[in-house]
Length: 503
Image 1 (cartoon, helix red, strand yellow):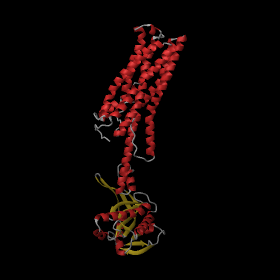
Image 2 (cartoon, rainbow, N blue to C red):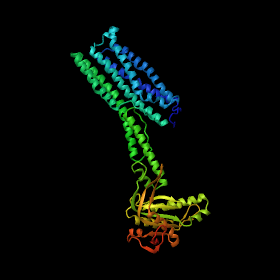
Image 3 (cartoon, rainbow, N blue to C red):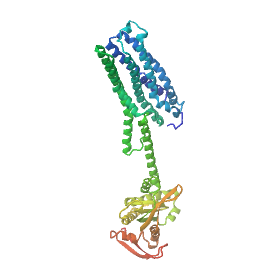
Image 4 (tube, rainbow, N blue to C red):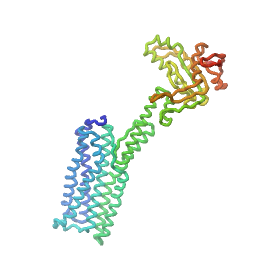
């Protein structure tokens, strides 16, 4: 894929030739439509001798001259496709290709109609005298309506081609249009004028200009030509108007199903194209948000990451105080273990162990706030609600001890003995830091006490120690064993502590 500003070859010579041919064939398709109109006219007028001359001037202008003019229009786009120009230099030409092509075809059509109207007066001969006479109003209407029809027809034909061209460029380079000159309501208005008001105007002018059999002839001719014109136009009109909407609708459905990898080509030069570009930007933002959440979730708990990302858009959690239960874990004798293992084996075993410990914490509604070396600092009911948080923390602690008991981790098959301290009480939580460096943290005496209890397991030869507040918060759900009162660093009074049998 090329990067912005590159002038790398996008297509092979054969592919460029195919794109050029498709463009030119659509641009000169006006000549085929003109042959149909001329055939209808001479059939109704029974003026077949006039057909070769009329068809010849149509082919000369709408096929020959038109092909040369449109070929020149396409040259800069070829240069971009072959790598001789940048996308930024060609974006305006690509965007305006439908209107530029349609304007040139309309001018050629005006010259063609003017020649046909003036021919009976400028070069009278037997062939031209066989044609039915037209009023001035009818001739003026013809000079206005037919070029307008060709402009509208070619505009929508090339707009449909623009979708193919933009799709090809998007597939090869990932680049999309960002300049939009078209207006969807104007396109829709043009379509309605061609299919309704233009034929109606021609019929009204006939009613005001003719009577008798001449009126019947003119109305029949105009209605027949109008029906054929609408028939050949409506396919490209609706493709041009509806295909970009269908593409966008399918992409939106894909995103709604959770697939953020979708990115769609901008295939129109109007508000729908602009909306498609905005849709791509939106999906890119959602994809980036998801990537940040996933990456952030590797460093803090995914629930904390989600809460921060959803916390009003400023990337912080406001400070608040809430009753919560804090859980600290640590590995007994980890320093000794670390001295005996190579670093890669130590990290492998520790990661496997931590993953085992994380499972019960998350399963019971806890949030892992941070890793402290070989230990974990987790909370229940802060920052995310956790009903019955004291009991949830105890259940998590029991499941942790059961999960690691008798298990050996990593390639080195290391046994990790886990100590856990749990305390319940008021906790202050929020985002703290300076400048662009922030961290979600929990503060307060409850946090300090849980950390102290974890360390006291060593003195009491226990694996889980809990505070009186945690025991009270669990009611009668568990059977706790009191260990008396103990002095805790940072506390002036002794505190009652408890353990729990996990067998």
